[in-house]
Amino acid sequence: MCDMNANPPAAPPRPQVVQIMRPDRGAYSIERVFADIRAAMTDDVLVRAWVCPYPSRGVLARLRGAIAAAREPADVFHVTGDAHYLALFLPRARTVLTVHDCEFVQRARGLRRALLWLFWLKLPVSRAMRILVPSQAARRELTALVAVRPEKIEVIENPVSTGFQPLPEPRHNGRLRILQVGTKANKNLERLAAALSGLDAELRIIGRPTRAQVAALRAGGVSFEWRERLSDAEMRAAYRDCDALAFCSLSEGFGLPVLEAQMVGRPVVTSNRAPMTDVAGDAAVFVDPEDVGAIRRAFQRLIDDRALRRALVARGVGNAARYQPRRAAAAHARVYRMLADRAEAGR
Image (cartoon, rainbow, N blue to C red; front, top):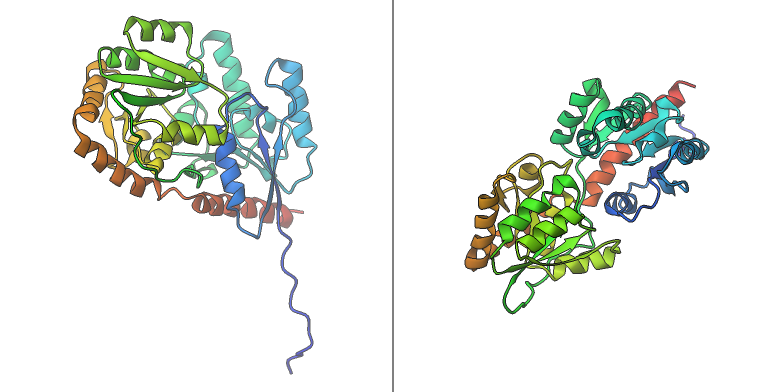
């Protein structure tokens, strides 16, 4: 006979997950991605953020950061990117590591490259049970540098923040206002400067350009201004106030600015390389990032062809809508539960 008064079985405890964030260094792309993931997280996982209080500068400060991370109470630890060394003392069976890209190793040389490879890739990857990457291109980049079992790596694409919403095109009198996000070497700013020389356009740069980049912009007679350390609201305003996005990168792990511009309703010129070709879908003008003439012709088309701009905007909003935070949150929650369940079973 069924005992109607019997208590139902207790629900399993929710895994306690800590997302370990890099020290504050004035760049917020990773922070935005994981804030959106936490906000959309499923109810069966409890996730909080922990920001490393020690700067990523010098051996001692980094060592203190890694020790502090290991002292955080959690069932699952997730090093969310950039400061990969924070995984060095975490329990391997309960650690997730996100590697957004490997460009920081590829552009380094000599002893610096060897140290970055060892302490930012080789050892952290060995200390994690699961490696997450945002694209197949990032997977290929990582496995070319470090031996990783295929089943250990999973692709979870970055989401575009719900704070980015379609907006009417701005009403500027005269020049095409182009937004460039980032100034690292892979962002290809010098070639963009040469491509824009003589065009009826002006450039808004997010990030501090180097002396060489400023010299290239001035040599090309390009009208430009730059800003850094933008808040989320200021970043959305930068997209709102531009006419188009330039994202002609030589390499990327994902290319989130492409989706942010598309969601706001701005046409995109980007590289004909993965992962940009995958992320942008059919809603961008693709160019060889090493061909200054091709970049120039792409922006001239945007200046001359309003119908093209409108078509790119219409397709772009639809493409960006596929990258919802709830999808990324559900994928992360599944990984967290898997590691928590395995750790519990092993006790």
